[in-house]
Length: 121
Image (cartoon, rainbow, N blue to C red):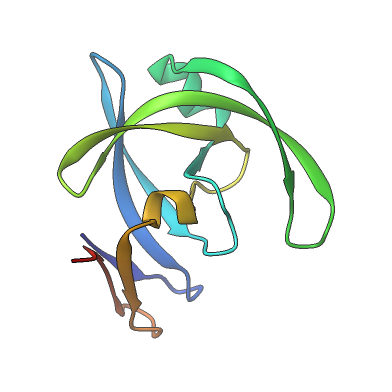
């Protein structure tokens, strides 16, 4: 899988999220400080009708605590459908370390640089 580094020096990857009938491509920031799978804003979660699973308490980068609504959804990851937990957050979508688990992440940390994600062998 490949993405690019944007003007803000954020590693970006387009990821497909879907339900049984509809697929949407979402540009997400890779956040190695986020231990979950994926965050999405409420409008995308509602549009795709993801199933509510519960709540999750998380510690943010500034040390504060936040409660997230958690949903179950499908993503296409490395060419395969994966059912994952999706945290609702009104920020830019984030890809976290649970989704990256078992993969090698390489980032050319310059604007327009290549972001490469490959399965570990």
